[in-house]
Image (cartoon, rainbow, N blue to C red; front, side, top):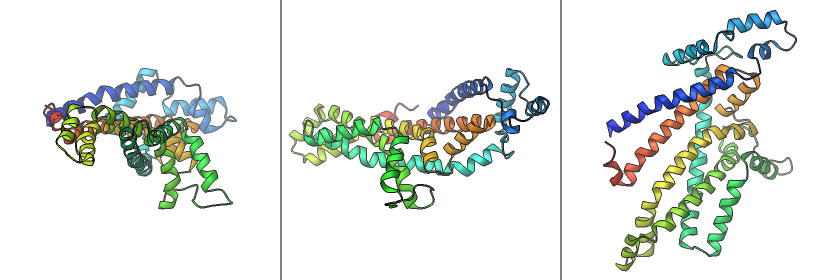
Length: 309
């Protein structure tokens, strides 16, 4: 197991390096100039050129990339071009809200998606199956932005004002953002649970369990569901990674002080250091989530644990 974890950690290095090169290249060739954005359009060309020189933006591409990678090796994410504060400090202050939002969204997706998927599979071709399938299609097709706007109009409009439409400090403020970000995950997890359950309840070991006279509840939850969980866990892990990045819109809609909103503000300010560090940080977390999902397989299916050598 330890050797497997070590190998996976080594495999993260080229992946993260690839992310660094791609994101750095995109920011390097983008038309917006951080110096111009910081000084304003009224700044003289001499002032802009002086600030570009101070920021190191006039250095060749390979020099800038090398400096950025070397700073990362020293665990130095640099300073924000807008505030001058260390980027790692800024990210650390905001990331807890983002990871809490993403975690609660995945938990909501599991709470809704797995039971609906089980019912849909067990009651195939019934009204329950049709209703769950409709939810799966609807939940996956509505973008977070429009879902968030609809929830705000329904529950946070001045006429009703049942729930707050901004902030993330109290449980009341968490309800709408979590529903917004978790509905799509619930739909995806539901469809995967249904598909996996349908595949497993037709297996010979399920027929054997029924032939032995075991209660249907035991057959479904102890035998079929346990073996159907591996693809569901995979999807849940991927959804968690996607939600870390997808929290951008949700945090912007509900004015949540998280990493996603910080990234949006940094893009508007052309704060290259924050953009690079933020994307890299999300990629790093996503890689660790994938590793955690793979290790979780061993606890669900002991046969997989024997392969982790």
